[in-house]
Length: 151
Image (cartoon, rainbow, N blue to C red):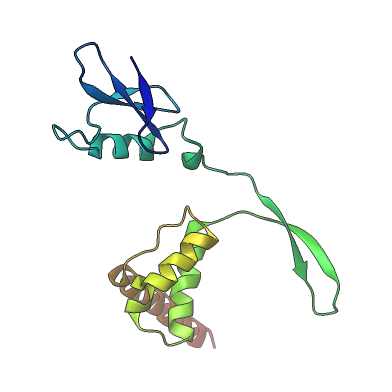
């Protein structure tokens, strides 16, 4: 079989009959489809997104060391780990505080910014954010009612 680079994740390989296949650079799995006209590359693209040996798919669960500035001008060291639930809550609060339209999170500039900040994050749709805002409103309403009932 001869090899040549197909994409940055796949090699094009040829069997004895001259049929073209794709082969994963990470796990060496042979996949149908290589853009030769008979079949597409969707199976390869799906495999690359799910390949356990692909370095881009590694989940880094270790916390990172970060420095935080304090009010007195001194810095402190702390540990930070990405929390998608906390990020989603803060996104909802940002939309409320800054009075942004829901469509803001679907704009290309915001999505590119979030991808650069944290490639693993899945930015929710504007409809999901609207539901989250309604849920937050109902939670705060209950808290406020309980606060006034205690006094």
